Image 1 (cartoon, rainbow, N blue to C red):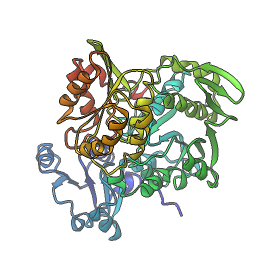
Image 2 (image 1 turned 30 degrees about the horizontal axis):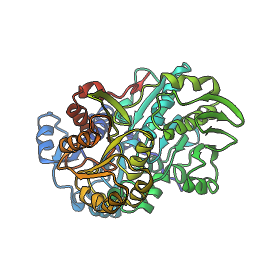
Image 3 (image 1 turned 45 degrees about the horizontal axis):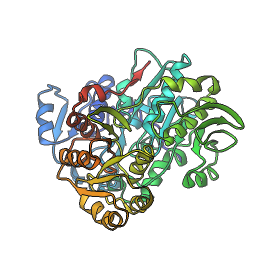
Image 4 (image 1 turned 120 degrees about the vertical axis):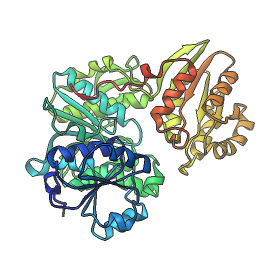
Length: 474
């Protein structure tokens, strides 16, 4: 039995709290205040944030720094920010006591339910790697076809910030993290189209295990039950899942009958469409995800073949294999969003034949690096510089490989030190690639701050390289 959508209006008369005061938390607060200006709210936040809240002058908003199970359990509904895991002991205990924990994404979907509980023209994209670029590319091609499209979600604009847009979009291109896919399922509202690109181990500290991560990610398909699912035929887990989905129209990309690549050529079935090598989509995996985008467009009943060439005018996103500039013979590439070893391998694959020094390491979530080390035996760069909390663990794993293969392996104290050692190893010519394969927690606020610091250390303006093009409605 699917749950009933819980709209903002239905919060009236209930004891409601917010948990988290980042951008998503603020968006939830403003959305609730817009509809329910007198609803008493409690905000669970830090001491510093509590001082900020006190200065806001909202008599119906109380800050609380004690997000304990007992305090959370005192509320009917807790709207939590995506980064707060529902598997934390206090969250589990509160849920067991009857508290309904939801996210802002669930509230937004509840506001957009229609016939058969389907949120019309919602196009949700998830996957371990490539989901931001895929979502932005989808919005870009739809706009190129003359369709007013919203680009929002995990990509950098909370859905609740677009709760009452001045211009109603025809389509919603929504990126969902593994933190948010469950929110869509919990909302009781079905997306029109859900896209799953790939599944690799990720965010194990939030989900607790790879199995739970995969289950949470796939709730967008198994529990949210979209009308149409667009799946990667080359991902073993998705291929197995697609065969078992009931009541969902499954469309495949990456297979010969649909949109797929043959080497660098884009095909629709047996029909050649174009050469993808010149497209501003770094990495073959991103060009492969163009196939996912075109499959979605086709599923909407639009002319995907006519829109495909507009990929040539796409502006790449920051922090995703982004060339920030070249100085003194060194090209600097910012892939700060890389938070898994698989992502670092994909980044290296983009520079085959070039002299590369890669910077890896960051917050240690326990992800295995054995596959990365195995690939280094045959496809090692000039240098690997380790850094961050899991740097020593990565270095220890790579030491016997480096001794056998002969690449430079060095340890750095921080990003500045890593960049200096990378430039030294390259000897004045090559690519310094920041693709850490790990989150930035501890050293930086987020991957954006890490990417900005990388650009600044390389001698480039971080403001110029950090803007996400196309966010919002256009």
